[in-house]
Image 1 (tube, rainbow, N blue to C red):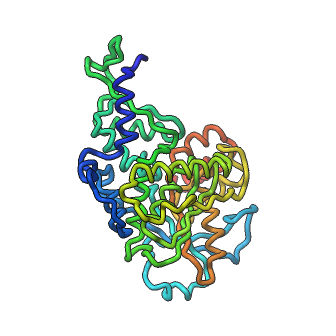
Image 2 (image 1 turned 90 degrees about the vertical axis):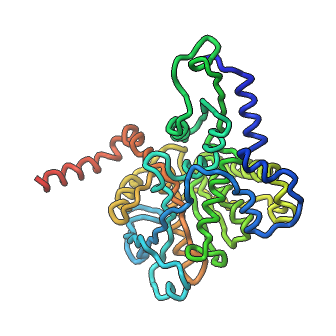
Image 3 (image 1 turned 30 degrees about the vertical axis):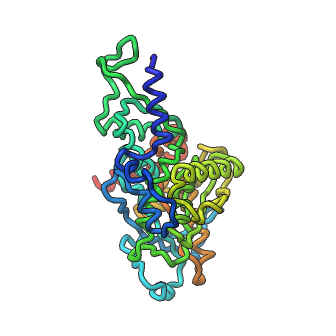
Length: 378
């Protein structure tokens, strides 16, 4: 299909360089270069229109007992988990009486049944921008492509219809934008930074408490956004990203690129700010069980099933199980009055349907379990 090259190039260039809606751009024109407080800086950067009306998300507390045995090697093993859906975030003294380690789970997987987790956070700032520029078509690559395309289609932008010989839809020019794999663009960072601003409120995680924030890393964009948000707000948070799809050198290269892009786009806000002195904002770590990206290992499906039965939280063995295992490991290490461990659930549970088709033998027990339930009900 032939696309209107001029329209496409103009749209892409405007998004890459303008970044913000017309409303935001008008506020930034002529802004003097002054040193801003953390709250002022983030307020300026996040002064824009959003897809999500509010950044709120549920936070659950997962308690585990280290005294139990394991049915396989790894941090999760056969540990029993208990989900407290209404945790208390007050004085740490209230928590020191507990003998069992625990960690918090930020339930971004509950934001939307289809477009949830890191996809919703990346689209939070990106989708309004697409609408501002009257984008009609979105070209993406990577695992997030269906979610991005679905979100744009649901927004009401024309993306189908009769196409003439010049690539126009019903005689209307088409505007096409290309989104990097995993929405690995500086615009996508803003929604993640908005999440950090929400989480650090005093009635939630707070600004003073030491936090180890764990996330699974595909392209690494979400982790980098979390790290930049913590730096901009001056939070004593360490972002730990479990590498899944690339080498540590590649992740660090992506990290440096997005930090540089962020400085370039928001340089008028970052004068004398500590982010100018930072080369890295993420602690990159390998996952517990190494494998080729996309593969799953024996026992991981059973572990996800066990966690779902005990907590009601759905994990997938490719992405979110890696973050869960790392959060479990860190919660043990930080048990003696150390940092609080928080896992960001990045969603991705729809991927379980594809895995069930590819790895049928790993999922047969789930089918047998459902059959047993049906028999018991009858």
